[in-house]
Length: 458
Image: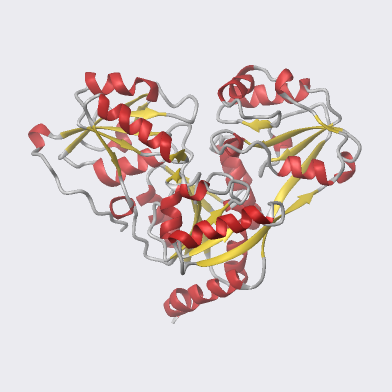
């Protein structure tokens, strides 16, 4: 059974510490389950929500919250945090989501302190679950470093050696939390039955096509118990730049030379870097050498002896003839463009490589929630973020693409959007394929195999 260690109680049950968990429908719920659920030393009086739309205004359900919370726990907008601290007499606010600059973290800490509460972060000792099988984690210093292509490369390596694999994916529970407590996806029909969002499909579909089951949800103790019953090795595919929920035996961390310096200036990405067993500098083929060198120097400054692997993200384009000489509109992974801070991705690289006549700026054609995203994230430069957290967003994405005056749509998301939206233009699918430079990553995986898998098999 998966276990975690909990902070020592600081008060009696009569005057338990009153806590707010600041989250984004993922790490926050896990931290609650691992540390606070059924713990009489604390009372979690609220969650707050950021980054993800349509989470605030709901409740963490009683069935998941445990015996201390028969009414569940309310979820409020993070904008209400200061007032909530005062009104609910909060002692501690714990930041429990990812991909924030260190400056933003301290701004939030200052707001909490000014309202009278203490500010906290929960670390690996108290939140990581222990697995009964070997675990490889793939995480990053920022959203959009290429974790998923790297994870698929490692999954193929393990499967080619005959091991049974289970993928445990960082949470994205944006629907019915009770129904999503512990989910297993092995067929395309499973995605339809669970009414998964675009973001979920982006992460799950590629593994399902490979014949590898994916586990995700809310209660990761239950999820881990399910996964390790059928797998010889678990692969943790991380989200954003968060650190794993499960204690890894090999922690692989990706870095992005298109954003040099971010590996030392974002939370909790720097934590990942400092914990890494292997650092993979990705996208070397498309980044300036000076920026690659800067990232390597930054790694060496804090981790002088860590193993470093250089890797490329190769573009795979199914119909380049629909790009050459044409006006194209580009759809990219939503989180990479929004809170990941990127202004371009695989779609732009494909348009440049295959000679598009024009990359059409979609902003003048955007409607509804897509138009709102452009307002909220002014750094976006005309690529369409594939926001699909709700049916309304999918409808607005479809309407925006149909309004854009272009010859073709470049779909640079990991999911096949043609199954979700009906557009009036031909669609070109663009994917990334991870390829390390040299044998270093394979050698490190062989060491992992020798230490953990062959030993277990004997």
